[in-house]
Length: 71
Picture: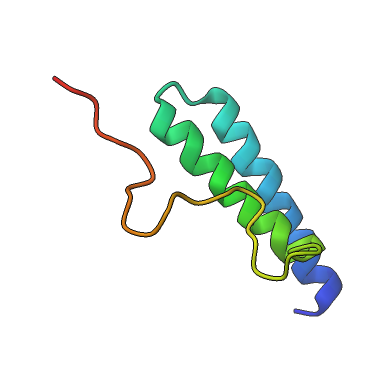
């Protein structure tokens, strides 16, 4: 693959993740899909001004991405 093909692939993956996020019902699943979409978009457009800042902010180190729901 070349850079153009890579960017097309990552952009399509980001679009797919956004659609999955919009159709998901569980908040943790929605968050995971948006997080993945952000990473794919970072691959297409770069991290921006802050060199190592993901498109979607991560929780502080050691904290889970989502908390399990109480039964």
